[in-house]
Image 1 (cartoon, helix red, strand yellow):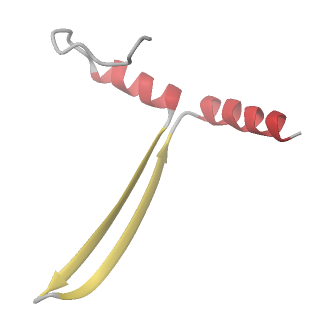
Image 2 (cartoon, helix red, strand yellow):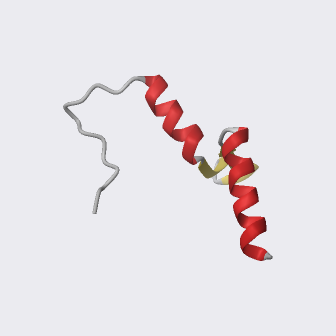
Length: 68
């Protein structure tokens, strides 16, 4: 079984990382709370999807085909 682990001795460029992220897609979920004196003033829930349009279209078509 092949693992997708980046070899630490290999130099990886930002372009290579961006290419992999856009080809696979990534979801980032987080919460930010701004509070003063233990009183929450602002709550921000974040859900971010980062992918290329081509990847999303392929995943959508795969999902539609599997549902029919």
